Image (cartoon, rainbow, N blue to C red; front, side):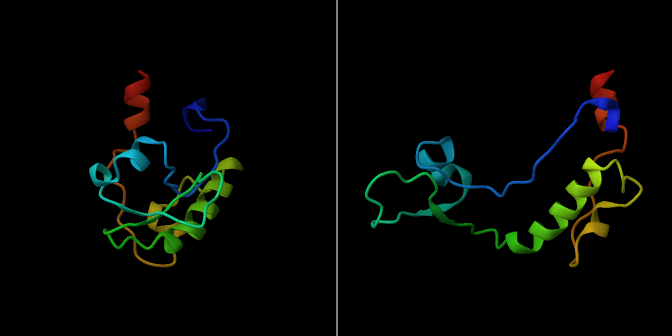
Length: 103
């Protein structure tokens, strides 16, 4: 894999949890929690409103495809927008960023 640093990866959507820094201070992270009053025992994940209007569903499939290919050591030649069906911003990091930090 890339620089032999990462041997596996998993794509997981962000989840707001009540006792995390985000759950305890949602305003600092720019989100608004939507508590569920029906919860009787544990509330591990809290629904939230993301005011940035990011289309999280749009990112889901593209990230899954990119990660699948990464795990099979394929697709490194493709730019980030290749993996998504809608327009995304190209990365602004230089291709040698990780190598520079490792050196």
